[in-house]
Image 1 (cartoon, helix red, strand yellow):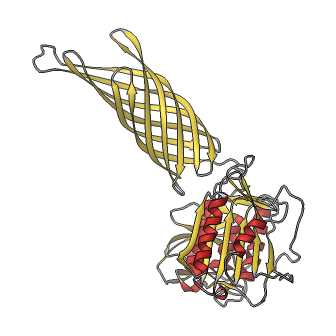
Image 2 (cartoon, rainbow, N blue to C red; image 1 turned 45 degrees about the vertical axis):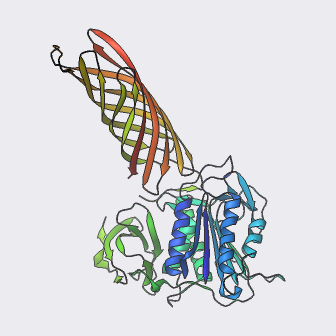
Image 3 (spheres, rainbow, N blue to C red; image 1 turned 30 degrees about the vertical axis):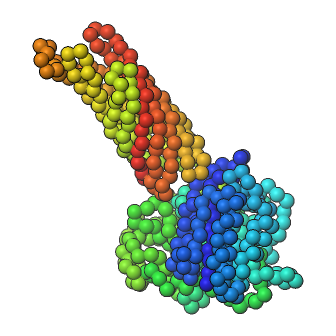
Length: 489
């Protein structure tokens, strides 16, 4: 049996910027290993934003499951995406020493333990390095424990994330290989050595082309046996895409309704290469130098599709940042919600709202509109107020893992419609009037990501609105709370 513990931490030590895609990475590792790697869903433990105690508790759960079987029947896979250095993982202000982590993993009765850490390994003295960059070499030590460590970056190097991939580049390459791209001999099995060789080459290639800063994955292996370790059997589930035989052709596979790369590979001039993907609709982009073309593909469960030259029609490269370094992120956002609160004129006020924003890393410019409704009882009449408004604002954002704090201000303007209805038995005539209003507002809000591309915003807004009533300019203060659901695109 196989057991997976996948951990993701977007927040590291105090001086480290929050990461953006760690939780995506952990979820994708879980999906690939459950689908193709022989891990049963109930034996896949995913923990996001863990403390040291929570991380070790998830390993203890794996230990409990492993104890139900003989040790030689169990393979433990541990995966971590987050901040780190040569000696430790960084979890929300805590340093978890790799020596302590290794000790906890050793408590799990398993014949083989595979640990994969996609984290920076800078800010410490140089340590071990791989003698051969494209192979895994068994290290002969007396206390061989059957444990394999795959590190996403070399000692003293930064691991990197990609906006285009919406994930870490090493994890993306490793999972690509496990889906079939690393099957170098075409036997429909991907071994540990094949997966690491592929991930190493692809990580070097993407980091060199995108930033010029090489990221060199490393491996340390202590094994009692050197027989090939099969990690996945790509043809066991899902649908199959095979790519044309060619030299130096780069293929990127996108989900039809997403902007991130699901998978990618380079063609072979010797044979067609197969890749296993879930059933669904895909856009396959082919790149050869400066020329790009695309193919639209719909796949059902168990289907195999051989892409041909005729499937492609002639049609910006991804930006990569070091983990935690959000350079120039920008995009569109649209949200809709409801607000309610109080103002000095009518008391309770409420209404729907819609907002569009264009966001950078730490700033956003927003425009929106909505309606407010309020009622109050006067001496002889019932007053009903309805307003329609537009607003514009500028805000500052601070990311803290999956949570984003938002602070800003702007202005609101619109038309206020007043209806005075006489109460029963009153001689006062009905009256209808309207006025233009304008005023400043400030707000504070918190955003919780629901997984790309959805989010929820909860916030409070204070404002003062000025309008003319009975030949006088009046100012009415108000405070409202709001909740909205939004999407990035």
